[in-house]
Length: 436
Ligand code: SF4
Ligand code: SF4
Image 1 (cartoon, helix red, strand yellow):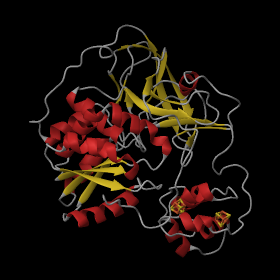
Image 2 (image 1 turned 120 degrees about the vertical axis):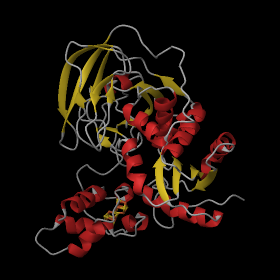
Image 3 (image 1 turned 45 degrees about the horizontal axis):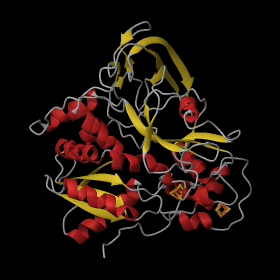
């Protein structure tokens, strides 16, 4: 029997009947107007290199990343830049976007793709292509992949590339569909990334329920260098979290008899983007997203151009069944509220949902009933109830508790199970960041 590696305590089995089916994807219509934000990453705004009135080609560089944390931005459709718009994001920062009206012919869409050999390229040149085509971590905050590679330069060897196919959250449906529809691209992207970081091995970390997918990965990747391994991991949330994943992979490596070393963890959407950047010299033009929630008429996984407005994405799913109470991007566990339906899909949008009822804390908080559920699910072993109460009281010394709050990695498990709908993880994370 194959061994399954799971983190030892806490976590939740998260299920949601309102997620779309994982059978296949639907390609969304091309947007007549696309809104391309200059911030699609955690760092500074990309510097715009086109002006209003300019004609742009599909895939053309329109914003140049500036320093660590910032990534290049490209036009995802051909057309004309008709205006610049600004809006406040959920974190209070301002974002600017170039609005492109689609005109003219496509350079890449529907054309036969030219492929470029990469096997004899040096790691530095591979990294340069990954940066040039604006590849970011597409299942997280959008951190540029070339930054993660640069940080590994001085990391102790061996280096292990982990391909994270851990479906501990049903809202990762788009990643699952992408794995099935673009398996070869994900695997070749893994090989390119492994060569770029000089990885000694690749571990495909796959949820236990997706063993068949894992076997397909190994069957395709098995003949290549560096050697590949399949680690079956638990599917309890937050197994895909870096801390919980590293914990179980250390056990896996001990069992297999090799050293895990320094890790670089990338998801399938990111690796497909690495493949496209290096092998096809193509920037991130589109991505798979899961669209669903109780307020959506026809939930589905869609392949959507970056810059498509979220309003249009919902319209292509048949619109709403009623007035949504909550619209957000990501998963209901950790989703970021969508402030305006004219916000666009960006590189890191893996899901958008609209709910008739709130599924998570954030409404009017009730009182703690000391049920202890939050303690039971915390994978770090914290006491969210106590930490939360301390964050609400001013003027008393609480350094010891705050050092514990800093251990919170914001998985949101405590908040999901709290019967009083208290905003536990949000308050604890905010308090740890503020240091009070
Ligand atoms: S889960 Fe909520 S109600 Fe229960 S102890 Fe924790 S904070 Fe209190
Ligand atoms: S959000 Fe923090 S406190 Fe809450 S369960 Fe996760 S790690 Fe524990």
